[in-house]
Length: 180
Image (tube, rainbow, N blue to C red; front, side, top):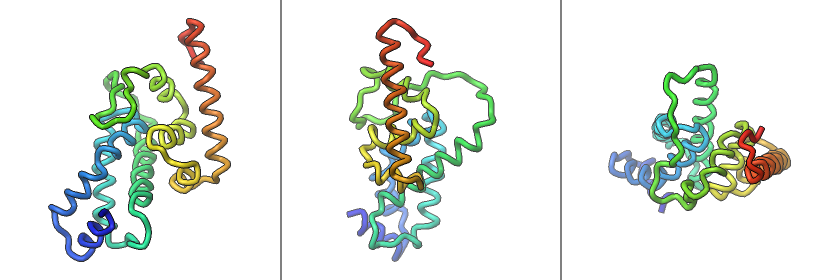
């Protein structure tokens, strides 16, 4: 279905067709961007920029390849660009954004809030692969391709992140709140 939609868009652009494409990918893109950027407002900006890049580059997309990996690479690159650009900025307001903005989430973060908070405390190089693996169900090979890393590097980052999360869980079960 997506390939046919892309083919139609490449032949003759239409707002209605692009809106269909948006509806197919927007919820998952928002969830992914929110988890990576740690902010639903930032995620909305990232997803908007992602779709603008998709629009500008749609004619270069190879219809012989699946669309989703191409789209996700653009999305993750936009998230990384956003994080790099805003890494030196001091937030002007403190918010407690913990709920991902979709009714279709497979995970109920209200029930697993402590784990979600712990994942958000991971460094980006561990947090992003964890999100891609366990929230978006990507295989290590796909994560490696998406992040332009070696598969063994992805496996190592996932392993280290799981070890860190397990340590934090043990500390929390013991009543400690630091988790460092």
